Length: 405
Image (tube, rainbow, N blue to C red):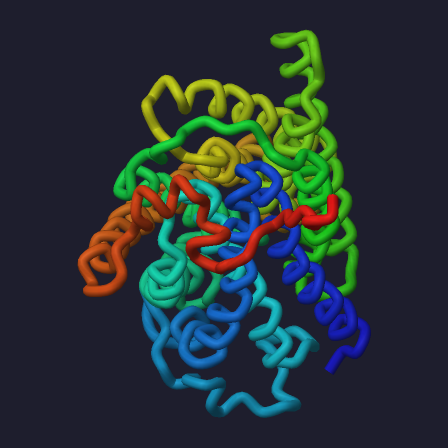
């Protein structure tokens, strides 16, 4: 066991878990005040539900041997994993790899809720979580990251989750938004911009564990991924901010925060394969693509409440494809298009299409199934939505004024 690598991965795991509360504040600040608790609770309950599902069967389905498309249940409830066992050829404990991957499994479905806030029934979401982790997240994680997965064997590059996390969640979010339908009260001004900025800052901070930790070692690759992550986030924030300034004559704080997240999304698959110039281009591209994606969405008649697809879907697709363009042999040992390997871009395209199709189809089936289960259904009543889900789903309010005031 390598104690230095183990220490870094313990810290990285905690950083990735911290991203989910960051997401909660980011999304919670963007909604109406009467839905702030509800929005934050989507993320918080995900930490509880997925943590249990993952150690029981989620990890086994994703990483146990199995076949090309799914793992088996040989490691149900982590059976057969000794406390001193190490993961593959690394020097980290297998149980630490389980833990690190669990944090990715937690934040991924939490991302979906950003498209469905203010109209997704909370109890239904809990059931949806269990089904989605089992039938969508675990299989795609197996395809891309398990050494028996078909996309892994094909050579798809996804250092930290461009396909597995961001495209996967964004497609499910888009499908869910279309199936659930539009809000009765669409359009909103963020009720708490400081929450949005706080959440973006926590996400930026936690992303160092997300990407830097995916090296699975405290080494030069982790440092390179760490630096590329920060660079792309900065470039994405600047790109979105400049476009906002040019179009509106003002630089939106929410826009700069969202641009940083877009840059982080896009660099996620590429962070262990590209250099600084690639990271800058990827970040600028993500900021610009996300900005225009947000402008286009209302014209398409979609009610993706917090523009999950524009940021995570388009950003994830751009990042996955850009990995095939800018990958460098000197960093990730795989050349991309610019180093004379156009085939890698084709392989990345296959990974994107496979993720989009599988997540879209299976997520749609899950949404339809939970909608017809007695006692569930996708939406609260119209009156509950009008009153706000904080009170109707949780019996609590984000902001309470003292009667003496």
